[in-house]
Image 1 (spheres, rainbow, N blue to C red):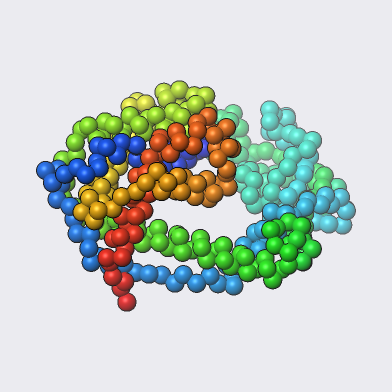
Image 2 (tube, rainbow, N blue to C red):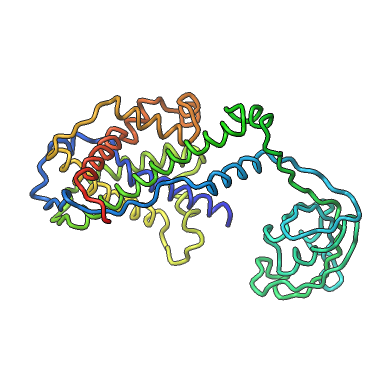
Length: 367
């Protein structure tokens, strides 16, 4: 189940990436007349709401608390006077018995869990709360009716549990010394100011992104599509398969067929996983083609152009957000920077950004 969730999440990330970038076939769109395929919707004089973009002191403190938590150290507590509390990380020894007999997977001399977070049968974690380090006790529980081990489903079970130790996270104190050692700043004051600046940039970017998305949605909704050329959809689809292969399949060393099976393993309504996966990718490819037709049409009307340097800036910005440099990317994905810029069509991404900047300037802010 966990593996399937990871694979499905990866697929959604890839599809989200494709929604924005599309494939590198600008020559199929640049300066083309799509009037026979669509009637471009209104893109001038649109309206949008501009939310508050001020970073609050609470947001800064949340960032600091998160940063301190990442630098927290674990302290093992073996004091027999300390009791387990909700949310604690504990290490236990346990032996489970059904009908007086031990069963496979029902015992461990050293098992780590977080009370209230680690998935266990009902009552198991809760029953540990209040017991002290070194204490041995018994829990009388019942396996759920839908338990994955059918032999145990619905049966009463007795667990003998011993609390080996508790692990407590200790966050460091926010001092000038800690700041100088663990951040790019020297003092707490500089650290807070730097965080405010970073969060302000992030907030401005995310706000701008949401506004642009809302404006593009308005344009797309008012655009009347007569048809989408099959050639555009075919090219987008083939390139999207190529992206999926290079970014996901080759990394996981898995075939498209097996990947599709894993992706739709929990959906019993899907009879042919590979066919369903290709269907979804093709549907998304058509939507990508429609968006690109609109973006390139506005660019043609407004005489907006982008350069290779613009594309590389978008790529570099993407890597920065992923906290990855070019060398690491090239090594991890076995492709050069220029190949990646070409594969994901960052030139279109740059055009997308410039076009929506223009649409945003032509729009009005709702009061």
